Image (cartoon, rainbow, N blue to C red; front, side, top):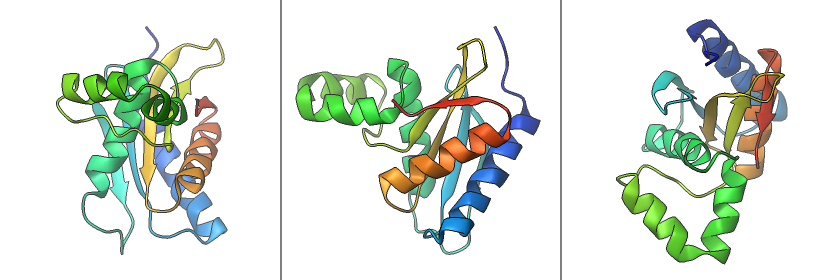
Length: 143
């Protein structure tokens, strides 16, 4: 299994935060998880509000849980609420079913982990996540 290194995780965070600054987004928080759902790295910009770690982590964790970006998890929440309720319960409340959780893949399509971002709109969070992932030479899948 391919690994997501700490160096790549830090590159993702740095580039995602830079994209947020470039776009004038509100303060972002970025969590990078490995393929097993373990935290690899996290940063929170000055001025970000509370619970941002939990939300960023939950977006990434949700993406890993279903094997696609959290935009799809959000869609499931609308179309199949009982499924998502079960997913949230099975995860111990860790899954956050909104866009902004993006799978990290290598060029072969293997899942290396996921990035969750929170702080602005879900669409903007996802844009920053994809920019960070691409800056690390990897492929982002927002679902």
